[in-house]
Image (cartoon, rainbow, N blue to C red):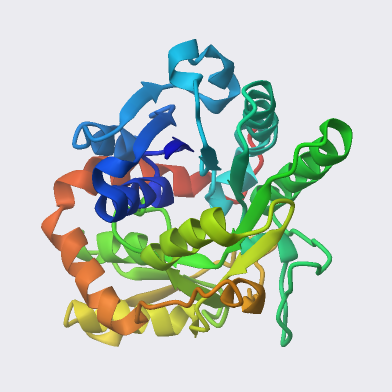
Length: 331
């Protein structure tokens, strides 16, 4: 198999590359592209030599040389801007990467007659569900510029299917957690704050609920969908683990043997969805199921961030500066 992974040094993309190498070893050829616009992806790129890597923005994917493009079996598109806070004050980059970027990758796939294409979307396209669970045919109701850009990308994919007769598979994962996650997201941000002597910051009353999915489960689900999923179909990826932000914070504090007075409640994020929840029975029918346990793995993840501070510390300082902008539109 020859597979092209976009965003190969981002959080899920990098874990997916490692998953493929571990499972398939030398029976797979991986081409990776990444723009390396953040220090974390750049760091990952310096410690991975198992793939044929091209530093490239997905909007320029047509610049890949002909030899690299030959006989690609599958594209998995992870490349995206993904942090909701950043999308509030800097939405333009989300439109450029998440919408225009997907259009370019799909054009590339059509031009090169690539038969299998998996686009990684998000459960956030459904918006907030107070009690129910979103299924793949539920109405998309995004709340943030980030989730709106991902929903828009799906509409682009749908239009390409109708216009150019090119079908893809779309996956909508729940909230991922794991190692190599940029410290702007809740779990690594909380760990980094505590290590630096600060408290965990909790938006609003801390009762917002997320559906927590370990990144390795996401990787195995995508692998299953590549092999068994139907072209032109969408699949939710979930775990059945639902925790609010206070519960997650308490787990992080426990892993670091710290008291619960190390939580600080801050002004809530604009448009903050209360609960994400997806039904993933459709994926389960392909024979997939989640295998990772939240609390057991969280202890290992916390230890990884403690032991690998050189990976995140420099970039974390910039994240702290950016958080001061997160409630305003500066473009």
